[in-house]
Structures are given as C-alpha cells and as structure tokens.
Amino acid sequence: MTAPKPSDEERLTGGGVNDVVRVASTVRRPVGAWTPAVHALLGHLRAKGFTGAPRAHGLDTEGREILDYLPGDVPGYPLPEYVRTDAVLRDVAVLLRGCHDATADFVPPEDARWYLPPRAGAEVICHGDIAPYNCVSRDGEPLAFIDFDTAHPGPRVWDLACAACRFVPLTAPGNGDFTLPAGEQARRLRVFADAYGLGAAGRAVLADTARAS
Image (cartoon, rainbow, N blue to C red; front, top):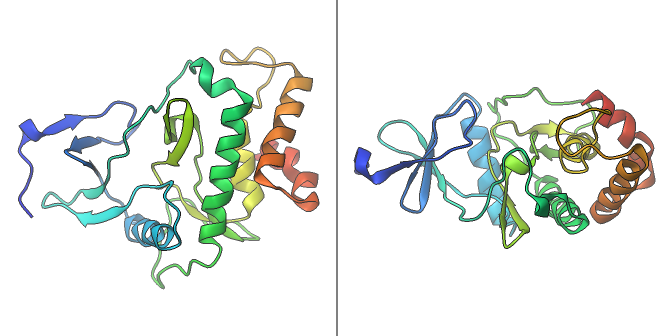
C-alpha cells in the first residue's frame, strides 16, 4: 500500500488525545494494544449486518489503523439543538441496542487486550464512550458510532447508563451544558430505556449504574 502524501491528509478536529486524519474515504488513527481486538469486533459487527460502525482495513505503512470515513455531523459542546430532542434520544438508544445485539455472540481473539478492563456480568461488548462526539448524524438523525477504542466486555446496562449520562443528559444542578430539572431528566431517561427495550432488571439498576459510571 502506497503511503499517503501529507497533502492528501486532512486533519480532523475533535479527535481528543488522538491525531486523526482523513485520507480520501478513510480515516487514519494511532493504534494501541487494543486495536486487534477492536478490529475483530468491527469485522464481526459488519458480518452481523450492523452498519452503524466503521469498517477496519488494517494498518497503513506508517502503522496507523485504517477505518472507513463516515460522512456526517459529529457535534461538540455546547451541543446543537438537534442533539437535545427526544427523537435523537430514541434513535441513539435503538442504534445502541442494535450494536449490543450484534456483539452478543462475538468471541474475542484469545489474546485480546482491551483499553478498559472487562466488567463483571458481561453480556455484550460495550462501546465504552457513547456520546454526541462519538456519534455521526446526517440531517439530525444518528446513524453510526465511531471511536471504538474503549470497547470492552460488559453488561448492557453499563453502556446504556454511560450513554444516558451524555444524551439525556444526567447532570447535577448548575452543570453548564444542557441542565434539565430532575423530573425532566427522569422522563428522558425513561424515553431512552423504552427505546432501547431495557427489561425490568436493567431498569431497576439503571439510575444507580449511571451514578457509578
């Protein structure tokens, strides 16, 4: 594979601690010890028909991982108005349920290493950081999650609670971004759980799990 020229690379904003560039229809990102497990996971998701995640295409000549570039909007803070709607809340929950269901029969490589340690009671592979900045939307509709570096085995409710903290959002009074009255936070949390299809056992621990996340 020919190495891309610097002029072919477009630096992408919002990469956090990572130096992320776009090259044509791909994204190039630094790798870690967890990258082989994440690439196996992304391959499994695609094989199961889940299209809400990028495909992995190995490494380039500079040792960076190659992923699909998913066109769309990835919001930052302060959040745009469309992220704050019930419709987006439901769409994210449905997308997360599809992702979780697709990973339920994933068998990690024997030597799999994860960025975050597996959590007790693992049922699925959690994304680990479901948040607006890791969600690609088009015309206000969430269509895909990106940045699976923090993926790890865990219980569904853990990932759901972490996502709820960002998308409901669950915040203390005085939070500077999108603070809602407690009653409205509770209502939106129910909307999120309903759209995901969370069962009674998960609902019983969802709030406590969110506080612990």
